[in-house]
Image (tube, rainbow, N blue to C red; front, side, top):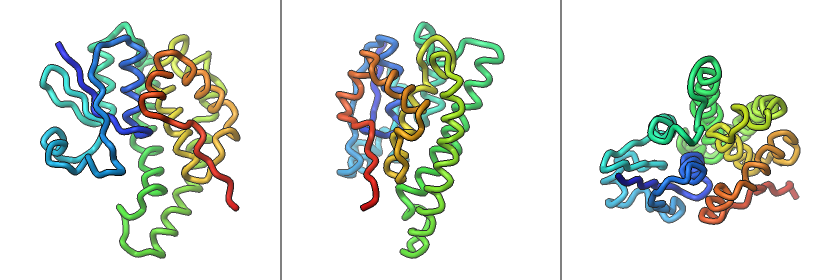
Amino acid sequence: MSLKLYFAPGACSFVPHSMLELAGAEFEPQMVKLHKGEQRSPEYLAVNPRGQVPVLVDDGQVITQIVAILLHLDARLPQAGILPASGGQRARALQTLAWMNNTVHPTFTHVFMPEKFTDDEAAKAAIRAFAARSYKGLLDEIEAMAAQASPWLTGERPGALDAYALTLLRWGGYAGIDPTGQTATWALAQRFAELPAVARVIERERLQLNVYKPAA
């Protein structure tokens, strides 16, 4: 029985990376340096032809897409509390996870990589500016959730939603949003980052939680 996680520092792969460490699972972390184009190397494309992270390999079975990976790990490591076990609480967690992945995450992609959507320079600038404004509104929705955390987004144990909230908040810095202004989410992210298992992930990924730089 073996687990291998392909991750990129600061990417959404931080979420399963954190969950594996929190679970105390034995796994092999394999860094993929996106800025060096390693996701487009023949070796990596042989693992994931879409050239994306994260990828989880479980005893030779390749699993891509963050929601699928988290659901697989939740079934594989039920003691980890990645998601609530059952009932309405699980359904609400899944709907939030799906929303983070299919709405908040792609909105940031429009900020960070507008070239995916147009090759016109003026259009790129317009897409980036519009998406940054939209992203702030989405972070405000997460802020409202964080304000109700008790103490974590899904209750008494830290889980996938907390890791994703930290990731999305951190990305806000690249969108010109000061994460410390999202006071409840920033406090949640700080608590999560201070967990020893998560601290190991942050050190391995060499992450700076606040990447915001005020406009000159």
